[in-house]
Image 1 (cartoon, rainbow over the protein chains, first blue to last red):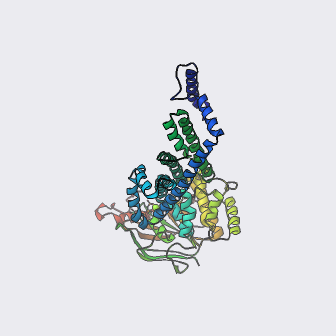
Image 2 (cartoon, helix red, strand yellow; image 1 turned 90 degrees about the horizontal axis):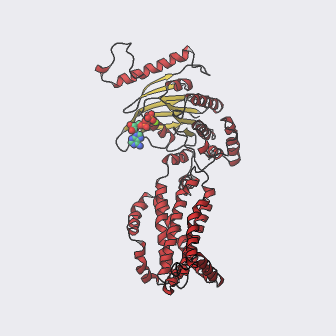
Image 3 (cartoon, rainbow over the protein chains, first blue to last red; image 1 turned 60 degrees about the vertical axis):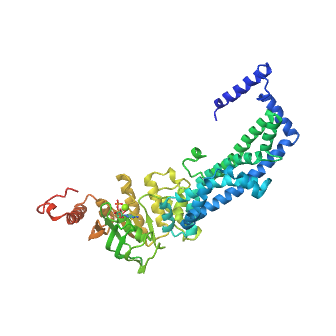
Length: 251
Length: 264
Ligand SMILES: Nc1ncnc2c1ncn2[C@@H]1O[C@H](COP(=O)(O)OP(=O)(O)OP(=O)(O)O)[C@@H](O)[C@H]1O
Ligand SMILES: [Mg+2]
């Protein structure tokens, strides 16, 4: 990013700061940067911020793990076996047609209001993009490269590991990133539907107490965490994808 | 013992296309046989059958007396495109062809071959950084690292410029002289067939059949500028002419023996 990208946010922050300082605006519904900083420091000092962050990250982490593992496994299974694809894919596509949030009441009914239903929701959000990404990548592997594997004597397992695997890797990482993004979306939904801690709870609490500053702090922390997690995925991916001509364009 | 024999091979695809009918080709040990034919006469189909990538609908293919069913350790191939694995560096791509070799031997041969194909120092590069000719050199090295008894070449030079093509002809002939694989190659370039082959099999299309097989009796190394080379080329061209004539209804055939083919 070039420094020029900072001009607008910094200018807006300064203008708003000035407007509140000189009494043009009250800053109650839209606190200026100095107040946000103050609120963040206070939340961090009391340890409250960390407990919210860990609660949210634990949910995302577990939900992402389950969703990504299930999505990958199902994508590999259906990509490897036309029979399994014909058997399972229509059902998965039908389930995908249901907007994920519509599952919330059922999940709460089945799994209770606590962690299990939240994890299920997040995992489901992660599952679909990962499944679709892996399946379509496997189906899109260049048949000509598979033939190279066959001519040089690889077994079907060897072809899966040494040709299909590396060929699918870029799309897999891209699918995981999409899944992670959806995971963040669904953790907010899950925490809004009732939680006693977590950044989503901080959002809800801020709304009920009329504390625009906690809401904004939660939003900013969400953005930072999301970006950090995505960067970790990219950092894991880059050394594995150095062979691509487009590594920078894609990640 | 790596003589290749293709007997009475036919191939009809699932959609009903009859690509090959009753093909008989034999390549003796260490011989270079070129299959010459126009587009769509089943050349690629034939090589895919020999490579074991597809199964014949009729007939058998045998290597060293052993009928093949599927891919065979003694048979290796260079395709029309280099088909390097983009996630392996050049050295690893060459080594990939030596799946059946023991690791240190594979490494040793890969290093020797990189030098041999004129790409010393390129072992650590990605395939994306190679030119078309360099990629095809790597593909040739990959195909030969396992010292195959039979090497299949499916027009591997057709996408290259004439300069690069001649230098690759030299490379293939040099490696052939060292390793003596039986080579079955496909081409639609008469010059290339006469330069490389001991025998030329001219095919005709719809369905693909053998029209005629002829021996190229020129000493190696071959000089394109000699009259013997020219004569051989002319003989091949005449055969192609006749194969095209045979395809046309009698009324459309050019009158008289001297009628020049409009196709050549
Ligand atoms: N998988 C397939 N299914 C159905 N028909 C096919 C298939 N592959 C090839 N054919 C048909 O078989 C015939 C021979 O094709 P082939 O690719 O072997 O020709 P070729 O001699 O290699 O041509 P070219 O010089 O253009 O590469 C063609 O009519 C082609 O359409
Ligand atoms: Mg072809």
